[in-house]
Image (tube, rainbow, N blue to C red):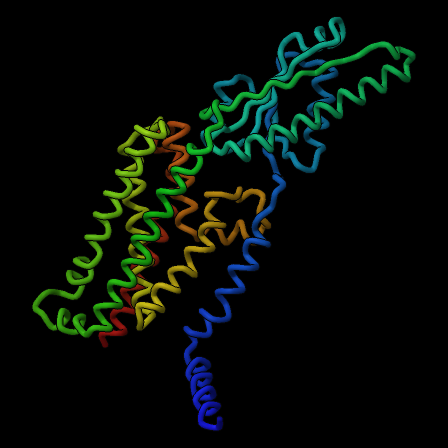
Length: 373
């Protein structure tokens, strides 16, 4: 029994002396449990709403004021046309547009029946439906208040009906696959480029072949690139396969330029490869490379906007999400595939991906040279 306990003690000492093991055993479980509870919120906040008012009467003014005063909405002012609304949706400046017809007040006063149209961004159908529902609650509250005012004025027999008609731009059928295909491509690329690249390079070091390769006449940078290029090609093939399946079988559109999409994807692949290379320079075993890759991939699922709206997350999580490459790629993919935007609308995403890729590359090269020394 004493020998058994001594072996147990020896194993504990090995674990405590290895910071990577401690990271995997103690930190990773906490992240996997705490992050979903901290990030996932069912409610949608800070809904940016603009108003297209063709009536400009006392009732539309009251509804607009109720919207802007509601804690769930942020007023973005009045717009002049639906074309302006579409442009603002593509730029990511608004989430909803409330449209009042030119005869709204006349219909409400004389026929006791009026309609309001709500435009929303259908590229994220689940979030769009929730946003529309919140706006409908505001309209229902105004209708109830109006009937109470009439009752107080002695007009108890009057009934008012305000109909809310919603229209999803870019995805009128509210198909969920339109939302998930861009995210699926991002996750597949991250898995191949980050995890498989880090494991492949560490495997060469574990088996001792990396030292043999570095002793060859080839420059070290050529050797590293030779390890990365196959995974880049495989990622492009997987991306093309997923896009073909989504287009021909699932009928997910490619509304924008395929060339712009490919350019964005190549930059994202580069960034993911550099993250995998960076991991390979700081670990010594394939198991550690795989676990650290998973440690990065799990938060990415929550913070990329693939499933959960980033706008609904706490402020700290929103800030952290800016360093997640998948967030920028998924955002750009949705804009290109669903909204059909041109390259100037995704320059922010492309710039962010390129900067992160360069940072990962410089860090990886620095650590790689340190190992060679």
